[in-house]
Length: 399
Image (cartoon, rainbow, N blue to C red; front, side):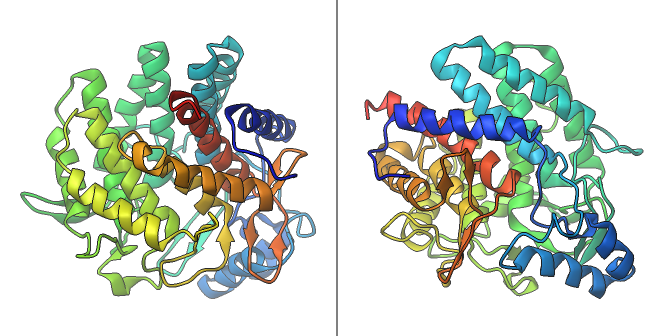
């Protein structure tokens, strides 16, 4: 793409292209960890922890996209559907064009159709592929806290616009899953930490608890049902209390439980969740840790040219998900006054370096070569979500 100024009109043109390309895929695509959806690898390597890890990591890290060669099917990703939905809802907010709302409602219906089956306490969502992690194995469609929380965010947004009770009821049901089916990893008078999945787990993944807490805080604000607000506050406080003296969060508590330290997009998840909590309860209870975290995020997880660092102590790969997350975080209501130029710089880097005008974003720049394939949720859904939000900020700030 030729160099050009970041304007609302230019970004809207890109959004039209991205949504057209994604719609032509039927909103189905490849996923970062879907190697075991290959019937070939499932047969050869799907029978034990280490072979499964080899299969997933090998496909994920290979310089080219092996998935078509390995017969990996394109599938829905509920988190991706939720992100596309929120992008449509933001486009509707700006334009008042009913077609965007109609498309969002179609995707919300698709989300209801892709709920995880099983004897869970409420609505829940997971990935449509088996997933082997060093600490657990999750069969396809096993629900998890992060996907369920992101899906809830889409339903909460839809309720704010339409006031349709069914959307709030979907979130109420999901809260039952989040509070009743996940493993409790810490439970004190002031703190609550829940597991990533409803499986035997001990690892405390930092963003999980605050994503759940943010969903509950917003639900309480919209419904007036304060039954779970105490749990929400303890979930949020657990994460706030783990902020380092220099403003960062480790990926896990304790930090040594993961090789991931201060990475890009999980830091953004925590900051966005804090922002949503304060917006929901109309308070600034966590403003100081939020601002401190935002400064660390801006200074240590992005380069001057707008490219996203992989971690605070590691530059490459520059991942499109990190770029999308930065745009979102710096466009948040409590951040935008100071950081909108940062969001614009990241968007410019992404459009100049990681975008094809046919309507798709590339996966990663490794520093030696670019992985020019598109993982639909990881690339297009995240950028559709972030660019739609950027348009709102550009218009509101007359940029």
